[in-house]
Image 1 (cartoon, one colour):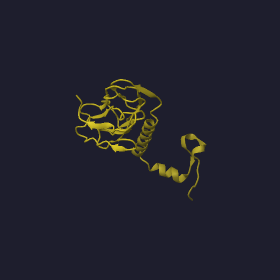
Image 2 (cartoon, helix red, strand yellow):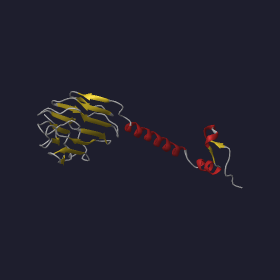
Image 3 (tube, rainbow, N blue to C red):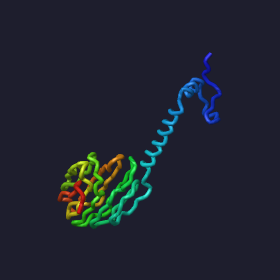
Image 4 (tube, helix red, strand yellow):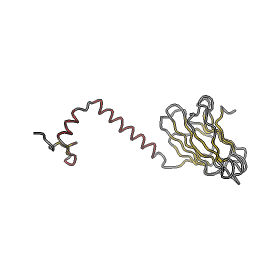
Length: 196
């Protein structure tokens, strides 16, 4: 006669009593399969860690190399290059939020020479009052900088944001670049080749 419930406790705890059939099923799982389950648990932990990465915001006040899994609030108004990290793990994220307007003719470059932007990137920019435009995607083979240029009544304005995610090979960019002032002119933003 089949046993439907037995004194099978997981980790010696009576609250985790399982059925006889469930015990038989456990016997069919190999050590390799348990290893796969362990890897899945680790992956879930990594996913949750990335999701919960931002517990503070760091001021971005001058040219620097960005740090993975960091949220920055930009306070820099003049020209600067913000280098992407040389070493990153798939799923690493960097977010940049503008708390100031970039000065007229100020240029913010995000990137590193010969480290190309992923062609999957999606960045939008204001193109006039109540108008949005799509920044042409990087080509994935020579565009190694995302260049944002400050201008009167254009960008880069307060509230602009960029999120960079490492896909295991390249950095992928997402974001919206808001205007400043009257917002009547198109923001200048483009994926470009190495700056001078």
